[in-house]
Length: 327
Image 1 (spheres, rainbow, N blue to C red):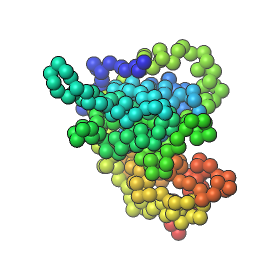
Image 2 (image 1 turned 120 degrees about the horizontal axis):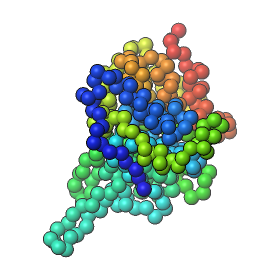
Image 3 (image 1 turned 45 degrees about the vertical axis):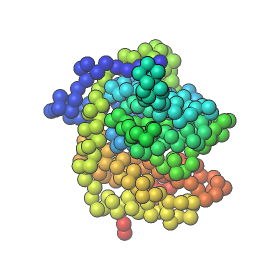
Image 4 (image 1 turned 30 degrees about the vertical axis):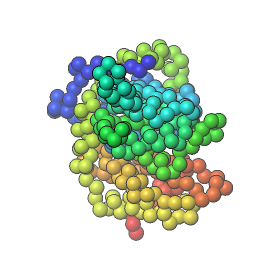
């Protein structure tokens, strides 16, 4: 059962002033970090993806905390939360909703599906058919759904966290590259370190910790933070660095195809968001480097698997080979 927190006393951006928005972001990181132990980097990147207005793909083994992270994010920001368990027999109508005839008044009425929430967890998205996957991904792209010739706008903010098991697991339908590109970032939580795991074993039930979370920011604050991202400055030198990264993916013979313009814009927007989260109104190269693996690794493919390189090594190659300043 999904847990939500009360919105009675949630602060807004106007209420926060003169307290820095970054202080409230740090409070959110701390609250989520009390539930997801030892994973501060993944938490911050998840917040970056949310503020940037993107969607998040989490690929990892079962039981690593993907669902827990999504619930904690929803509670930290007071977001309406819904979870969709993707199975082989799930239909698009199960996600979007359905129009039902009401005999009492002789009219048709639309019953909203779970997609009409601020934060939607698409659990094990690669266990359903491509047709159903497409229904979700189109809603992600457009921010609205069309049913029976009617267009309905989805709530704002609208954030999808899709989880998938590794393709090696049985019964999976891998997302094609064109659909992977719809996700701003891909993250892996990974195993906890020994210290965090010991604390996890000693602590109380995770559901109690999620239910006891304090709300740090409101949904309206998320929208306002997203609007501020466009005000973060990028110098020509910084954009030159980004373009050298993009050009490298298109020219190096390791990759079967380079980053698309959408991928290039995703990298820049993510870097701007990371800078804003750290109290800067300008982007530095370290911002680009911090978000690069999460933004680009799922968008790149090697020409031959014989290279022995994994997706995680692609971004490392870019960091090693592309100079920050041109000679």
